[in-house]
Amino acid sequence: MNPKRSNEKNWLLVAIHETKPVGEREPTIVRVCRDPNDAIPVAQYIVAEMKKNPFTPEGKKITSANLFDPAAEIKKWNAQAWHAKLGGMPDYYNIATGHKLAAYQMWTMQVAPGQPWDHKPIIKAMLIQRGIFRKGWQRYAQYDYFYDIWSNIHYGYVGTAVDFSKDELLGGAGLAQALSDAKRDLQEKKRWPVMQSHPENGAWPNSADDVQDHISIQLGIDLYRSAKPDTLSAERLLSEITSVALPWGSSGDNQAKRPHQCSR
Image (cartoon, rainbow, N blue to C red; front, side, top):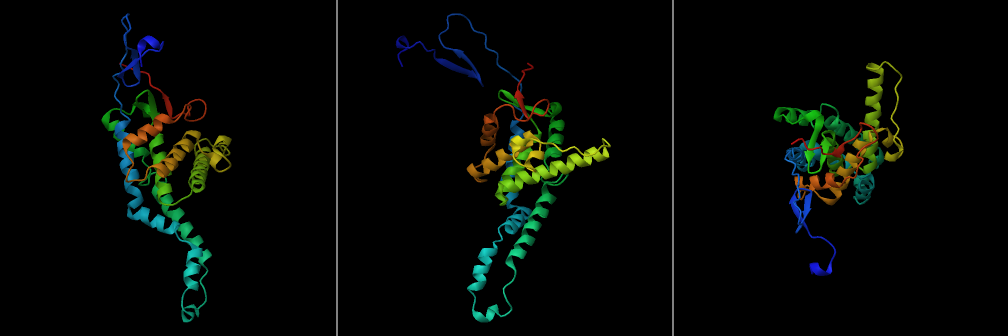
């Protein structure tokens, strides 16, 4: 482009998300934030978990239970020789219900608080050990992210990988949140349970979940559809969280993303 024929200024990238015009006659002070991008090691950790866990023995068992297809089993039974059918056809739809209930139970044993795929306490301990917990907020580029998001993204991604539907994952999360809130109200606040209601999440039980958690789980679901474990990377995940518009959550303090305020 000929600069004499354009009123636009060419811009030079001088730091991550910091720019200044090229050819300015007046000196320009550009502030380069030197705060570390400490969300990167967390993204690397959770991506390793997301790539691994669908293929663990637990992940494979859940997938197998979810993939049980009664219609396919009936078709196979009908294709057998007559003498193999003498005992009558099994109730494959009842069997399928049993498989689905087993899948739910195995999934819960992996993702419930304190279980192997509940990464929140693991990430918190890791950040505290490194001295970068900072009340749960870590920086990447122009924004800070609350540490809650990572395990919720894993929940959506791995849940989709082991063949749960979107409705099962989002509804299950909402139901779990409702039960957790009820337990807290009864045991700690000594009051009748008050259920959250966020219609932007969809119908109940989705609406009972925290908005920021719902968004994080949906991100994980969508990410699995576009990046399978063999292609997933920390860079891709960081790109995805960067693209989430503000607000990532509901009003007040219930946010998972905020503009970074440079401290250096």
